[in-house]
Length: 499
Image: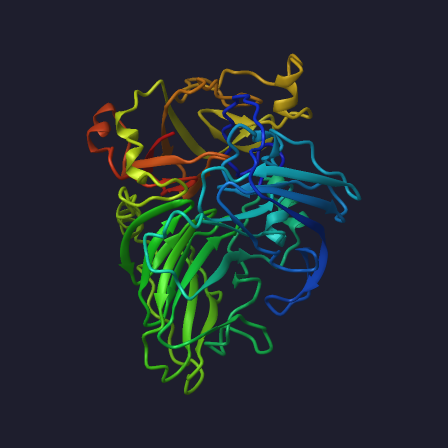
Protein backbone atom coordinates (compact mmCIF):
# COMPACT_ATOMS: atom_id res chain seq x y z
CA UNK A 1 0.00 0.00 0.00
CA UNK A 2 2.89 2.50 0.10
CA UNK A 3 2.72 4.72 -2.96
CA UNK A 4 5.67 4.08 -5.29
CA UNK A 5 6.61 4.70 -8.89
CA UNK A 6 4.17 3.88 -11.69
CA UNK A 7 3.74 0.24 -12.68
CA UNK A 8 4.13 -0.94 -9.09
CA UNK A 9 2.31 -3.72 -7.27
CA UNK A 10 0.28 -1.09 -5.43
CA UNK A 11 -3.36 -0.65 -6.35
CA UNK A 12 -4.70 2.89 -5.94
CA UNK A 13 -8.01 4.39 -6.98
CA UNK A 14 -8.44 8.09 -6.34
CA UNK A 15 -11.88 9.62 -5.85
CA UNK A 16 -11.63 13.35 -6.45
CA UNK A 17 -14.06 15.63 -4.62
CA UNK A 18 -13.01 19.11 -3.47
CA UNK A 19 -14.58 20.43 -0.29
CA UNK A 20 -13.17 23.15 1.88
CA UNK A 21 -13.48 23.27 5.66
CA UNK A 22 -12.53 25.08 8.80
CA UNK A 23 -11.52 24.20 12.32
CA UNK A 24 -13.99 24.36 15.20
CA UNK A 25 -13.38 25.77 18.66
CA UNK A 26 -12.00 22.49 19.99
CA UNK A 27 -8.62 21.92 21.71
CA UNK A 28 -5.39 22.02 19.71
CA UNK A 29 -2.43 19.70 20.28
CA UNK A 30 1.00 20.33 18.77
CA UNK A 31 3.78 17.92 17.85
CA UNK A 32 7.28 18.44 16.42
CA UNK A 33 8.71 15.47 14.56
CA UNK A 34 12.07 14.94 12.89
CA UNK A 35 12.15 12.00 10.47
CA UNK A 36 15.63 10.56 10.01
CA UNK A 37 17.61 7.40 9.42
CA UNK A 38 18.67 5.25 12.36
CA UNK A 39 20.78 2.11 12.57
CA UNK A 40 19.07 -0.94 14.04
CA UNK A 41 19.38 -4.73 13.94
CA UNK A 42 15.83 -6.07 14.31
CA UNK A 43 16.78 -9.43 12.76
CA UNK A 44 20.37 -9.45 13.98
CA UNK A 45 21.76 -7.69 10.89
CA UNK A 46 22.63 -4.00 11.05
CA UNK A 47 20.57 -1.95 8.64
CA UNK A 48 19.16 1.49 8.07
CA UNK A 49 15.66 2.13 9.40
CA UNK A 50 13.47 5.24 9.46
CA UNK A 51 12.72 6.73 12.87
CA UNK A 52 10.81 9.72 14.20
CA UNK A 53 12.45 11.75 16.96
CA UNK A 54 15.03 8.94 17.14
CA UNK A 55 12.28 6.38 17.86
CA UNK A 56 11.54 3.23 15.86
CA UNK A 57 8.57 2.78 15.70
CA UNK A 58 7.57 6.42 16.01
CA UNK A 59 5.64 8.15 18.81
CA UNK A 60 1.94 7.58 19.53
CA UNK A 61 -0.49 10.37 18.68
CA UNK A 62 -2.95 10.12 21.61
CA UNK A 63 -5.86 12.52 21.08
CA UNK A 64 -9.61 12.80 21.66
CA UNK A 65 -12.62 13.15 19.36
CA UNK A 66 -12.82 16.58 17.67
CA UNK A 67 -9.35 17.74 18.74
CA UNK A 68 -7.29 19.70 16.25
CA UNK A 69 -3.94 18.09 15.51
CA UNK A 70 -0.91 20.08 14.35
CA UNK A 71 2.21 18.08 13.44
CA UNK A 72 5.32 19.85 12.17
CA UNK A 73 7.42 17.31 10.23
CA UNK A 74 11.12 17.96 9.47
CA UNK A 75 12.47 15.71 6.73
CA UNK A 76 16.04 14.69 7.54
CA UNK A 77 16.03 11.86 5.01
CA UNK A 78 17.94 12.09 1.72
CA UNK A 79 14.76 11.91 -0.39
CA UNK A 80 11.26 13.42 -0.42
CA UNK A 81 8.77 12.41 2.27
CA UNK A 82 5.03 12.43 2.95
CA UNK A 83 3.22 11.19 6.07
CA UNK A 84 -0.29 9.82 5.71
CA UNK A 85 -2.78 9.07 8.50
CA UNK A 86 -4.16 5.59 7.83
CA UNK A 87 -7.88 5.48 8.59
CA UNK A 88 -8.18 9.03 9.91
CA UNK A 89 -11.07 10.67 8.09
CA UNK A 90 -10.18 14.06 6.66
CA UNK A 91 -13.68 15.44 6.50
CA UNK A 92 -13.83 18.64 4.46
CA UNK A 93 -10.03 18.86 4.63
CA UNK A 94 -8.40 16.30 2.36
CA UNK A 95 -5.49 18.69 1.74
CA UNK A 96 -3.73 17.16 4.76
CA UNK A 97 -3.99 13.55 3.62
CA UNK A 98 -0.27 13.10 2.97
CA UNK A 99 -0.28 11.27 -0.37
CA UNK A 100 0.82 12.38 -3.82
CA UNK A 101 -2.75 13.13 -4.84
CA UNK A 102 -3.08 15.91 -2.27
CA UNK A 103 0.36 17.09 -1.18
CA UNK A 104 3.65 18.03 -2.73
CA UNK A 105 6.36 15.85 -1.14
CA UNK A 106 8.46 17.44 1.62
CA UNK A 107 11.93 17.86 0.08
CA UNK A 108 14.98 16.58 1.96
CA UNK A 109 16.00 19.13 4.58
CA UNK A 110 12.61 20.89 4.55
CA UNK A 111 9.66 20.82 6.89
CA UNK A 112 5.87 20.84 6.52
CA UNK A 113 3.11 21.31 9.08
CA UNK A 114 0.07 19.04 8.91
CA UNK A 115 -3.08 20.42 10.48
CA UNK A 116 -6.35 18.46 10.68
CA UNK A 117 -9.27 17.77 12.98
CA UNK A 118 -10.24 14.27 14.11
CA UNK A 119 -13.86 15.23 13.68
CA UNK A 120 -16.49 12.75 14.91
CA UNK A 121 -14.02 9.86 15.17
CA UNK A 122 -12.81 7.33 17.71
CA UNK A 123 -10.58 4.31 17.46
CA UNK A 124 -7.23 2.80 16.56
CA UNK A 125 -5.20 3.93 13.55
CA UNK A 126 -1.61 4.44 12.45
CA UNK A 127 0.49 6.77 10.30
CA UNK A 128 3.28 5.94 7.88
CA UNK A 129 5.45 7.43 5.09
CA UNK A 130 3.52 7.04 1.84
CA UNK A 131 6.31 7.50 -0.75
CA UNK A 132 9.01 5.39 -2.31
CA UNK A 133 8.59 2.19 -0.25
CA UNK A 134 9.80 4.05 2.85
CA UNK A 135 7.22 2.24 4.97
CA UNK A 136 9.25 -0.95 4.50
CA UNK A 137 11.99 0.76 6.55
CA UNK A 138 9.75 2.09 9.32
CA UNK A 139 8.57 5.64 9.88
CA UNK A 140 5.26 4.40 11.24
CA UNK A 141 3.52 4.92 14.57
CA UNK A 142 0.12 4.79 16.23
CA UNK A 143 -2.89 7.10 16.37
CA UNK A 144 -5.34 6.69 19.27
CA UNK A 145 -8.55 8.72 19.19
CA UNK A 146 -10.30 8.48 22.54
CA UNK A 147 -13.99 8.90 23.27
CA UNK A 148 -15.08 12.19 24.76
CA UNK A 149 -15.92 11.91 28.47
CA UNK A 150 -19.62 12.41 27.74
CA UNK A 151 -19.77 9.22 25.64
CA UNK A 152 -19.09 5.99 27.56
CA UNK A 153 -17.19 3.09 26.09
CA UNK A 154 -19.36 0.08 25.19
CA UNK A 155 -17.22 -2.02 27.55
CA UNK A 156 -15.57 -1.63 30.95
CA UNK A 157 -12.65 0.79 30.92
CA UNK A 158 -9.50 -1.34 30.48
CA UNK A 159 -6.62 -1.05 32.92
CA UNK A 160 -4.22 0.11 30.18
CA UNK A 161 -3.58 0.22 26.44
CA UNK A 162 -0.98 -1.89 24.66
CA UNK A 163 -0.10 -0.83 21.09
CA UNK A 164 1.45 -3.47 18.84
CA UNK A 165 2.82 -2.96 15.32
CA UNK A 166 3.20 -6.24 13.47
CA UNK A 167 4.92 -6.28 10.10
CA UNK A 168 6.80 -8.25 7.52
CA UNK A 169 10.45 -7.20 7.34
CA UNK A 170 13.22 -7.34 4.76
CA UNK A 171 16.92 -6.92 5.36
CA UNK A 172 17.20 -5.21 1.96
CA UNK A 173 16.98 -1.43 2.15
CA UNK A 174 13.75 0.26 1.07
CA UNK A 175 15.64 1.72 -1.89
CA UNK A 176 16.73 -1.73 -3.07
CA UNK A 177 13.21 -3.11 -2.60
CA UNK A 178 11.82 -0.18 -4.55
CA UNK A 179 14.26 -0.74 -7.39
CA UNK A 180 13.47 -4.45 -7.51
CA UNK A 181 9.72 -3.80 -7.77
CA UNK A 182 10.21 -1.11 -10.41
CA UNK A 183 12.21 -3.67 -12.41
CA UNK A 184 9.34 -6.14 -12.24
CA UNK A 185 10.85 -8.41 -9.58
CA UNK A 186 8.70 -9.98 -6.91
CA UNK A 187 9.28 -8.90 -3.30
CA UNK A 188 9.76 -12.52 -2.32
CA UNK A 189 9.34 -14.02 1.12
CA UNK A 190 10.06 -11.59 3.97
CA UNK A 191 13.18 -12.22 6.03
CA UNK A 192 11.18 -12.14 9.23
CA UNK A 193 8.25 -10.67 11.15
CA UNK A 194 8.68 -7.78 13.60
CA UNK A 195 6.59 -6.83 16.63
CA UNK A 196 7.08 -3.18 17.63
CA UNK A 197 10.29 -3.07 15.64
CA UNK A 198 11.79 -6.04 17.48
CA UNK A 199 12.73 -9.44 16.13
CA UNK A 200 11.46 -12.74 17.51
CA UNK A 201 12.01 -14.26 20.94
CA UNK A 202 14.22 -17.33 20.55
CA UNK A 203 11.44 -19.89 20.72
CA UNK A 204 13.33 -22.26 18.38
CA UNK A 205 17.13 -22.28 18.36
CA UNK A 206 17.18 -23.69 14.83
CA UNK A 207 15.07 -20.83 13.45
CA UNK A 208 16.05 -17.84 15.59
CA UNK A 209 19.66 -16.82 16.10
CA UNK A 210 20.85 -15.74 19.52
CA UNK A 211 21.29 -12.12 20.56
CA UNK A 212 18.14 -10.70 18.91
CA UNK A 213 16.25 -8.17 21.07
CA UNK A 214 12.55 -8.96 21.46
CA UNK A 215 9.49 -7.17 22.83
CA UNK A 216 8.30 -7.91 26.40
CA UNK A 217 4.80 -6.81 27.46
CA UNK A 218 4.60 -6.61 31.27
CA UNK A 219 1.14 -7.17 32.76
CA UNK A 220 -0.56 -7.57 36.12
CA UNK A 221 -2.58 -10.72 36.87
CA UNK A 222 -6.33 -10.16 36.80
CA UNK A 223 -6.07 -6.94 34.79
CA UNK A 224 -7.66 -6.34 31.39
CA UNK A 225 -5.72 -4.58 28.64
CA UNK A 226 -6.83 -3.10 25.34
CA UNK A 227 -4.45 -4.41 22.70
CA UNK A 228 -4.45 -2.15 19.63
CA UNK A 229 -2.84 -4.23 16.88
CA UNK A 230 -1.82 -2.81 13.48
CA UNK A 231 -0.41 -4.63 10.46
CA UNK A 232 2.02 -1.98 9.23
CA UNK A 233 3.80 -4.26 6.75
CA UNK A 234 3.96 -3.93 3.00
CA UNK A 235 2.75 -7.24 1.58
CA UNK A 236 2.10 -10.03 4.09
CA UNK A 237 -1.13 -10.98 5.85
CA UNK A 238 -0.39 -11.99 9.45
CA UNK A 239 -2.20 -14.18 11.97
CA UNK A 240 -2.14 -12.70 15.48
CA UNK A 241 -2.61 -14.72 18.69
CA UNK A 242 -1.63 -14.78 22.36
CA UNK A 243 -0.91 -18.15 23.91
CA UNK A 244 -3.75 -19.38 26.20
CA UNK A 245 -5.59 -16.04 26.04
CA UNK A 246 -8.83 -15.07 24.32
CA UNK A 247 -8.99 -11.98 22.11
CA UNK A 248 -12.28 -10.15 22.69
CA UNK A 249 -12.74 -8.01 19.57
CA UNK A 250 -14.26 -4.60 20.42
CA UNK A 251 -13.20 -2.18 17.67
CA UNK A 252 -11.69 -1.99 14.21
CA UNK A 253 -10.52 1.19 12.47
CA UNK A 254 -12.92 3.53 14.21
CA UNK A 255 -15.97 1.27 14.52
CA UNK A 256 -17.09 -0.50 17.68
CA UNK A 257 -17.88 -4.11 16.84
CA UNK A 258 -20.15 -6.78 18.20
CA UNK A 259 -18.01 -8.25 20.98
CA UNK A 260 -16.82 -11.74 20.12
CA UNK A 261 -13.99 -13.92 21.38
CA UNK A 262 -11.35 -15.19 18.97
CA UNK A 263 -8.37 -17.43 19.61
CA UNK A 264 -6.52 -15.78 16.72
CA UNK A 265 -7.19 -13.13 14.08
CA UNK A 266 -5.99 -12.71 10.51
CA UNK A 267 -4.86 -9.10 10.20
CA UNK A 268 -4.18 -8.06 6.64
CA UNK A 269 -1.86 -5.30 5.43
CA UNK A 270 -3.08 -1.90 6.61
CA UNK A 271 -5.71 -3.22 9.04
CA UNK A 272 -6.11 -2.29 12.72
CA UNK A 273 -8.00 -4.08 15.51
CA UNK A 274 -8.67 -3.57 19.22
CA UNK A 275 -8.97 -6.57 21.53
CA UNK A 276 -9.65 -6.77 25.25
CA UNK A 277 -7.35 -9.37 26.79
CA UNK A 278 -7.77 -10.39 30.43
CA UNK A 279 -4.79 -11.74 32.34
CA UNK A 280 -6.64 -14.78 33.70
CA UNK A 281 -3.96 -17.48 33.49
CA UNK A 282 -1.91 -19.13 36.23
CA UNK A 283 1.38 -17.53 35.13
CA UNK A 284 3.21 -20.83 35.47
CA UNK A 285 5.40 -19.32 32.76
CA UNK A 286 5.49 -16.40 30.34
CA UNK A 287 3.27 -16.58 27.26
CA UNK A 288 3.97 -16.16 23.56
CA UNK A 289 2.53 -13.27 21.55
CA UNK A 290 2.70 -14.42 17.92
CA UNK A 291 2.36 -12.85 14.48
CA UNK A 292 2.90 -15.46 11.76
CA UNK A 293 2.67 -15.05 7.98
CA UNK A 294 -0.35 -16.32 6.05
CA UNK A 295 -0.27 -17.74 2.50
CA UNK A 296 3.54 -17.68 2.49
CA UNK A 297 5.61 -20.82 2.05
CA UNK A 298 8.43 -19.84 4.36
CA UNK A 299 10.79 -21.49 6.78
CA UNK A 300 11.60 -18.10 8.31
CA UNK A 301 10.73 -17.37 11.93
CA UNK A 302 7.40 -15.95 13.04
CA UNK A 303 7.24 -12.72 14.99
CA UNK A 304 7.22 -13.59 18.69
CA UNK A 305 7.02 -11.29 21.71
CA UNK A 306 6.59 -12.22 25.36
CA UNK A 307 3.62 -11.60 27.65
CA UNK A 308 5.11 -11.44 31.16
CA UNK A 309 2.89 -11.59 34.24
CA UNK A 310 4.28 -9.84 37.34
CA UNK A 311 4.06 -13.20 39.14
CA UNK A 312 5.39 -15.32 36.27
CA UNK A 313 7.24 -18.44 37.40
CA UNK A 314 9.52 -18.81 34.40
CA UNK A 315 10.25 -18.11 30.73
CA UNK A 316 8.04 -19.21 27.86
CA UNK A 317 9.03 -22.51 26.25
CA UNK A 318 7.71 -25.18 23.96
CA UNK A 319 5.94 -24.85 20.60
CA UNK A 320 4.05 -21.75 19.50
CA UNK A 321 0.25 -21.85 19.65
CA UNK A 322 -1.16 -23.36 16.47
CA UNK A 323 -2.08 -21.04 13.59
CA UNK A 324 -4.95 -21.77 11.19
CA UNK A 325 -4.19 -23.92 8.18
CA UNK A 326 -1.65 -21.89 6.23
CA UNK A 327 -3.56 -21.79 2.95
CA UNK A 328 -7.15 -21.96 4.23
CA UNK A 329 -8.71 -18.86 2.68
CA UNK A 330 -12.17 -20.11 3.74
CA UNK A 331 -11.10 -19.61 7.37
CA UNK A 332 -9.95 -16.06 6.75
CA UNK A 333 -13.03 -15.12 4.72
CA UNK A 334 -15.48 -16.59 7.24
CA UNK A 335 -13.66 -14.88 10.09
CA UNK A 336 -13.91 -11.55 8.25
CA UNK A 337 -17.62 -12.14 7.64
CA UNK A 338 -18.14 -12.68 11.37
CA UNK A 339 -17.01 -9.13 12.23
CA UNK A 340 -20.13 -7.02 12.74
CA UNK A 341 -20.89 -3.42 13.61
CA UNK A 342 -22.16 -2.79 17.14
CA UNK A 343 -25.30 -0.93 16.08
CA UNK A 344 -26.39 -0.13 19.66
CA UNK A 345 -23.12 1.49 20.77
CA UNK A 346 -22.41 5.19 20.65
CA UNK A 347 -19.00 6.16 19.32
CA UNK A 348 -17.92 9.70 18.49
CA UNK A 349 -21.51 10.88 18.96
CA UNK A 350 -24.11 9.91 21.59
CA UNK A 351 -26.49 8.37 19.05
CA UNK A 352 -25.94 4.67 18.31
CA UNK A 353 -23.75 3.71 15.36
CA UNK A 354 -26.74 1.86 13.88
CA UNK A 355 -28.76 5.07 13.60
CA UNK A 356 -26.87 5.60 10.34
CA UNK A 357 -28.91 3.21 8.21
CA UNK A 358 -26.52 2.75 5.33
CA UNK A 359 -28.62 -0.06 3.84
CA UNK A 360 -31.43 2.38 3.08
CA UNK A 361 -29.32 4.89 1.12
CA UNK A 362 -29.78 5.00 -2.64
CA UNK A 363 -26.64 3.98 -4.53
CA UNK A 364 -25.60 6.59 -7.13
CA UNK A 365 -22.49 4.98 -8.62
CA UNK A 366 -21.41 1.34 -9.12
CA UNK A 367 -17.83 0.26 -9.88
CA UNK A 368 -16.67 -3.30 -10.45
CA UNK A 369 -12.91 -3.01 -10.05
CA UNK A 370 -10.85 -5.91 -11.36
CA UNK A 371 -7.17 -6.43 -10.69
CA UNK A 372 -5.09 -8.84 -12.70
CA UNK A 373 -1.55 -10.22 -12.55
CA UNK A 374 1.17 -7.89 -13.80
CA UNK A 375 1.22 -7.26 -17.55
CA UNK A 376 3.81 -5.76 -19.89
CA UNK A 377 2.94 -2.16 -20.79
CA UNK A 378 5.47 -0.24 -22.88
CA UNK A 379 8.19 -2.66 -21.82
CA UNK A 380 7.45 -2.52 -18.06
CA UNK A 381 5.62 -4.97 -15.85
CA UNK A 382 2.56 -3.18 -14.47
CA UNK A 383 -0.36 -4.14 -12.33
CA UNK A 384 -3.71 -2.66 -13.31
CA UNK A 385 -7.21 -1.91 -12.09
CA UNK A 386 -9.80 -2.19 -14.86
CA UNK A 387 -6.90 -2.21 -17.31
CA UNK A 388 -5.26 1.01 -16.03
CA UNK A 389 -1.98 1.36 -14.13
CA UNK A 390 -2.10 4.65 -12.26
CA UNK A 391 0.51 7.30 -13.11
CA UNK A 392 1.04 9.92 -10.35
CA UNK A 393 1.21 13.39 -11.94
CA UNK A 394 3.95 15.89 -11.10
CA UNK A 395 1.27 18.37 -9.97
CA UNK A 396 -0.87 17.19 -7.03
CA UNK A 397 -4.45 16.55 -8.07
CA UNK A 398 -5.92 18.94 -5.52
CA UNK A 399 -3.77 21.81 -6.75
CA UNK A 400 -4.66 21.04 -10.35
CA UNK A 401 -8.35 21.15 -9.49
CA UNK A 402 -8.12 24.21 -7.25
CA UNK A 403 -6.33 26.27 -9.91
CA UNK A 404 -8.03 24.72 -12.96
CA UNK A 405 -4.77 23.42 -14.44
CA UNK A 406 -5.70 21.43 -17.55
CA UNK A 407 -4.21 18.13 -18.65
CA UNK A 408 -3.08 16.88 -15.23
CA UNK A 409 -5.69 14.12 -14.84
CA UNK A 410 -8.71 12.57 -16.54
CA UNK A 411 -12.08 11.86 -14.92
CA UNK A 412 -12.56 8.74 -16.98
CA UNK A 413 -11.83 5.74 -14.78
CA UNK A 414 -14.07 2.96 -16.16
CA UNK A 415 -16.71 1.36 -13.95
CA UNK A 416 -15.80 -2.12 -15.22
CA UNK A 417 -12.97 -3.99 -16.92
CA UNK A 418 -12.59 -2.65 -20.47
CA UNK A 419 -12.06 -4.82 -23.55
CA UNK A 420 -8.91 -3.01 -24.64
CA UNK A 421 -5.15 -3.25 -24.11
CA UNK A 422 -3.95 -2.16 -20.64
CA UNK A 423 -2.42 1.30 -20.33
CA UNK A 424 -0.66 3.67 -17.92
CA UNK A 425 -2.66 6.82 -17.21
CA UNK A 426 -3.73 9.37 -14.59
CA UNK A 427 -7.33 8.24 -14.62
CA UNK A 428 -9.67 9.10 -11.72
CA UNK A 429 -13.12 8.11 -10.56
CA UNK A 430 -15.51 11.01 -11.09
CA UNK A 431 -17.33 10.77 -7.75
CA UNK A 432 -20.79 12.27 -7.24
CA UNK A 433 -20.80 14.90 -4.48
CA UNK A 434 -22.85 13.52 -1.56
CA UNK A 435 -23.38 10.36 -3.57
CA UNK A 436 -23.27 6.79 -2.26
CA UNK A 437 -21.01 4.42 -4.11
CA UNK A 438 -21.05 0.65 -4.47
CA UNK A 439 -17.60 -0.83 -5.14
CA UNK A 440 -16.95 -4.47 -5.97
CA UNK A 441 -13.32 -5.59 -5.84
CA UNK A 442 -12.66 -8.65 -7.98
CA UNK A 443 -9.25 -10.21 -7.30
CA UNK A 444 -8.06 -12.17 -10.33
CA UNK A 445 -4.49 -12.40 -9.05
CA UNK A 446 -2.96 -15.24 -7.04
CA UNK A 447 -2.19 -13.18 -3.91
CA UNK A 448 -4.31 -11.47 -1.27
CA UNK A 449 -4.81 -7.76 -1.95
CA UNK A 450 -5.50 -5.00 0.59
CA UNK A 451 -7.60 -2.04 -0.51
CA UNK A 452 -7.59 1.17 1.50
CA UNK A 453 -9.66 4.31 0.98
CA UNK A 454 -7.74 7.32 2.26
CA UNK A 455 -9.67 9.76 4.40
CA UNK A 456 -12.88 7.74 4.28
CA UNK A 457 -14.59 4.69 5.72
CA UNK A 458 -16.75 2.22 3.84
CA UNK A 459 -19.18 -0.52 4.84
CA UNK A 460 -18.06 -4.06 4.06
CA UNK A 461 -21.38 -5.61 3.02
CA UNK A 462 -20.09 -8.95 1.76
CA UNK A 463 -17.37 -11.13 0.27
CA UNK A 464 -17.39 -14.43 -1.54
CA UNK A 465 -15.48 -16.74 -3.85
CA UNK A 466 -15.94 -16.54 -7.59
CA UNK A 467 -17.15 -13.75 -9.85
CA UNK A 468 -19.60 -11.08 -8.70
CA UNK A 469 -22.96 -10.90 -10.45
CA UNK A 470 -26.08 -8.78 -10.00
CA UNK A 471 -27.54 -11.67 -7.96
CA UNK A 472 -24.74 -11.26 -5.40
CA UNK A 473 -26.61 -8.26 -4.01
CA UNK A 474 -29.13 -10.58 -2.40
CA UNK A 475 -26.38 -11.67 0.03
CA UNK A 476 -25.39 -8.14 1.13
CA UNK A 477 -25.43 -7.30 4.83
CA UNK A 478 -27.36 -4.03 4.86
CA UNK A 479 -27.70 -3.72 8.63
CA UNK A 480 -24.50 -4.31 10.62
CA UNK A 481 -21.67 -4.59 8.11
CA UNK A 482 -18.65 -3.00 9.79
CA UNK A 483 -17.44 0.44 8.68
CA UNK A 484 -13.67 0.55 8.16
CA UNK A 485 -11.02 1.95 5.83
CA UNK A 486 -9.10 -1.19 4.73
CA UNK A 487 -10.39 -4.52 3.48
CA UNK A 488 -8.73 -7.62 2.13
CA UNK A 489 -9.71 -9.44 -1.05
CA UNK A 490 -8.48 -13.03 -1.12
CA UNK A 491 -7.27 -14.44 -4.43
CA UNK A 492 -10.15 -15.47 -6.68
CA UNK A 493 -12.55 -13.66 -4.32
CA UNK A 494 -14.62 -10.54 -4.54
CA UNK A 495 -15.48 -8.07 -1.78
CA UNK A 496 -18.45 -5.70 -1.82
CA UNK A 497 -18.34 -2.23 -0.31
CA UNK A 498 -20.72 0.68 0.14
CA UNK A 499 -19.06 4.07 0.60
